[in-house]
Length: 569
Image 1 (cartoon, rainbow, N blue to C red):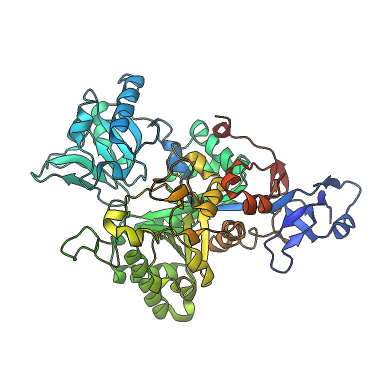
Image 2 (cartoon, helix red, strand yellow):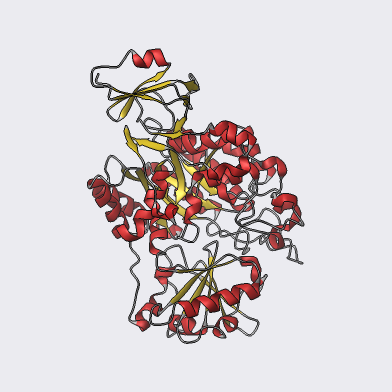
């Protein structure tokens, strides 16, 4: 055994239950040969072994981001990004200013992000307001949650087909263009994706580059690497060209992380196509670092727009009959799960409201009865912003996983869900402490969708918000919520719970627990080194946790000092 490097005198948090803390690590090539005390490690040193005194620095296992969107972020490189505000007048002034800053010659299609859903109330934004500012070209203003947008009249006209209806070719189902009481399209649209605006691009004779390349992607990937992310799961992999780029990076020795691809299932009827896409990608793009074994589906939309499925009628429905909607029935989900189990493909499901969560739990339970001892797939319900108390235990009982984006735990989504869920239920959202206490497995992620929010992919930011339930960058009303702490106050997570979710749980869910997730002999030498004692920092000053930067990271035994262009800016 040739030991390349020994790191000693450290405070090493291993996530190995048999040895939670260690002093030293011995690295043999890409893997850990020893995790233990100083004397044991030093005894393994040979003539060529490099000795590194950690001088009391803290080491944790490499982190895994359980749900993010590198390909989507990359294609937003050309968007116009404005400042956040919940004030309508200020928003309109910002849009007007940026439209002047980026004239038609430079941005033939004015695509601006973003606005908060609640800024326009339940009626939503209207094209007339946007027309008054921008009428010389198509314009689209993106909702900050990326599940809605707002077109001006020029854009709507370009999207309108011979049938008199606007169209967007979204891969996740048919977008919903809203109408007013007179049946006129307002410009407000749900679930519309940028690349689906083909009518606009065709009529303009212009289309921006929207595939991954070095210019668009390197800043984000370096940002992940800088903060100790050793693996990412793509929320859904957007096409062969993007996966080809990831493959190119890995073959060139430049990927420097693990990448888990997912094949989108837009509608249940297309399950054969989604499975075929997985099989194609497996044959063409599988490497030591790239894998595709997961299907992604959206079972509902968002709480803020009311296109979700609730266990109770919406608070703003006087008839008491509107529970929202799901994009598939329990029976359809059950059958998809049985099929995927037969194919041995995992399932990753966008699940927002408690009704959708219950539907998915029911579907898993029924599918497990059908499959019996042959049940083998991993099912992840991602987001799960509100869970009915009666269903909390089912995460553990059914052996499913929750993926949650930690930086959402404060004021990021504001109060947009209150009209639909009511104040009382809103105050139970984004709380996973009870799930964890019941033995349920909760992993964590960033779910960043564009460059406007890309710096929130820093897991230190996510951990800070989850530990404090305060978003210092997008606070909720301090007059209503003292200190801008998002209820419930007892929903705060600990640093230990957060590291466990970012490491052990995510590695297990992505079937990488034989390689990473904990620091143990035989696993990869993937870890993060900090000058600070991050545990003391978290317990004493969690509100400043995002100020922590790793000193360095190790990926497969190689020491890395990376500073992303995003960090520099």
